Image 1 (tube, each protein chain N blue to C red):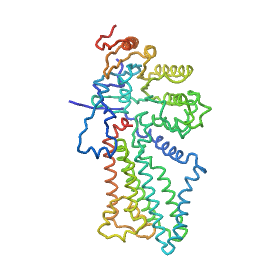
Image 2 (image 1 turned 90 degrees about the vertical axis):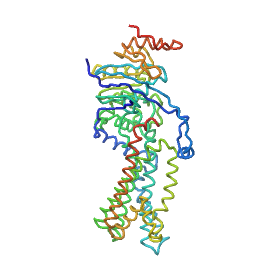
Image 3 (image 1 turned 180 degrees about the vertical axis):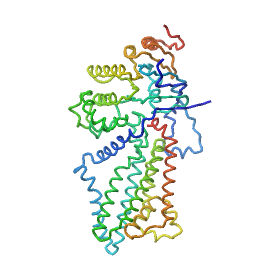
Length: 263
Length: 256
């Protein structure tokens, strides 16, 4: 009979709080390493991007004041999705040099890989809400709270994807290229540059299966239109998040113990 | 008798030989209906031993005998295919430390990364950073990015962090093969201090004198099996004779 049992004394997850902080801090530092302005540029990026897009779209879509804000929200949320899923997919490979050094939970490097994208999205959200407030379109506390919840759910979707994809990538080394194609195609599945209303209603349900779609539509709804999506819509979004997270966690759980061998 | 802090019983491990691995979605899709025979390389076969509390145990064996794989299994980095590994204390492994830094970060940030991976808290690390740099003799290069370090400097830094991070059991792969004579001496002194303080150690070395002088007991691994275990000096002698035998007589009983 084949039997396997490995029992290690528990290190206590609290000991790794320092690792989480260090990974976030050093990822941030590495990303802006050597750039003119360094950290300042990291902080200014969402602000400058917002202003540039707003100025350009104000000129191009002068007759559609709502459309430019819809577009900016869609672009920023999708940019977060693309950047964070790519970082998550590559995370175990990128941090492999740490995983072969000592025994620690590898999900930490997967989940923290989204930190740079989270920082950019958070700053963008602050810029957006400030802009709306200054232009007399303040979304209200409930709107801001719901927008925050959507971003948390979006992060959980990304975390679920990253957990599964990061361990699968160690076996399928072209998965990042496949994913790049999928996210490029997905840009047009999500209603970023077009209003969802131009498509027949029967396909809407399928579009909602692509996670950025409900997040983008719901965010626009609470921030710009002052409308709260229905309880059922929220329930479906939470369900979609739970499914992505559960599937990702299951794949991760099955493959993570052997991931160091594939580095 | 002292309690074992590490108990390994009947551990076996195989790897798929990389040349026949399918590594991309494309390769898997093309081979969907074609079964490709996969060659499996057995690295460890039914290995059993124990490391007692406060003991320094040596591990010898020729290249490819399975030493590094065994250390990674005991450290919890690789899982065993079969068998049982029971670890009753926190392990600090010092494995492949010459490589694997973030080249864009300076020494202080890299110390923080490696230290936290090894289970140190930020508070512990902040108070230990000066001592780590001093041990590695790299105080002047604390703010230099690792890309500008020589391989020797990087390895010295790694050993300095790991020696400081030790909590209970220390696992070392080719420990004294790094740095100049002065650094080796400091490593050896630190090793003896840790041993005296009651830490358990598992030490791999190709150098019989190192095993004989630093270990209480040793194991000899050959082709994934423990072929000899006993007092460190006897196992070191057996290792030397194994190197000169052609073909090695693995069945020869331990003399002593």
